[in-house]
Image (cartoon, rainbow, N blue to C red; front, side, top):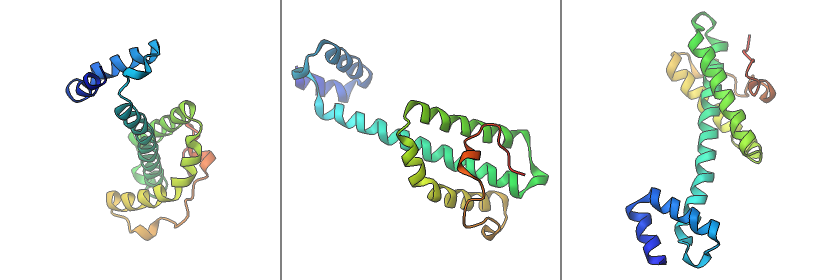
Length: 147
């Protein structure tokens, strides 16, 4: 049965997921494709971390554009700021432990956002401060917009 589960993983992933869930619910541990199950569980964690970084970079990018290009502010930018803030809050609601990861990657995400903002706006990268001008508590407030 185990070799069947491994084959199923390669031929019909969705069915493999359904069968794996069924085996787990039934406590049939000897039939589980543990190698691929472990790989998939680890991939979920990596995916959540990538989503956190992506949403944080997009949030910081739009906050920078909002702050440093006030004449070009738009509802679209405002929407994007709120959207990515809410996505981060959803991540933290589902996985509070990712708040630690948020702290770990914050400075890197800010540097990336500065580079992206410079490329997108045409402003010199030196326009943006080396240290993030937005408080973390502010950027995690869906109502927040910098002056």
